[in-house]
Image (tube, rainbow, N blue to C red; front, side):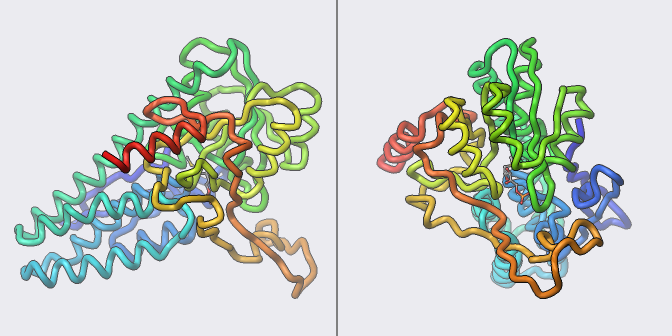
Length: 352
Ligand code: MRU
């Protein structure tokens, strides 16, 4: 399986974290090594690593790298202060995927607690926690795959958008985890992968991941989704998520909302597959989810080639919000919920 990696290597006593550079896939497999929290923050911002759970895992490793940079700091208060600054830098990389903030808040009690330990011990503890977050994500995805596969018929064609696979997570994937789960259960699954303009995660990453696993995949441009649905070629739409608000409204890659509306029109179930680390009970509705806007160059250029006139005005939101009413079910590691049931579940959890 093609994966995001996070290999931890010792080089001259200094630990570095290796990531596969997802900007270059599928043409080239190049490894980027991050030695500092700033390098990890840059890797997240520049999308060397992307996908909500993978961003969270990288943030956790970024905090461990930050602790390593403080090997000379022995005063616990100074260590905590510097770690707060590290956290601020990592938190400022990408605003939409809540997994980033989820992972930072999972790391915080730990770095606060270990502040008075020896520097080497502090660093080792934080690397272990980052590794645990990664492994925990794989386990969650396997459960998502097992719950989700039961929703598919024995022979199914699934349409997916962006990349919610092994590359976007600790491994196995969320939306692609459901597809992998179905294949492992002996079902015959074919996939339509939207190319996912403008950054082409579908063409570059999903098509690559599925083809590497010998799962039949057909690449289409985003504007072809309506036609394949109208022709009765799709049994289910399954996408990942970057943030699910408390009412079930879901932010995911730009274009997801349109697919949900199309799926409703054609009577096709529309599923969101995501771990609980993507659910944000503190954001009541989708309208309050911050949406990242990215460079106009992603829209005006294909690689190095300009596709639009110089100086043209461009709008490039990286995500949109699908209202909960279009979502048939949210597939999580704890089971399959309708958006209303998920809201109720979150409300009950808050009251406990
Ligand atoms: O901009 P990206 O590539 O980070 O966006 C990724 C997505 O929108 C994914 O669908 C989402 O993060 C879920 S990944 C399991």
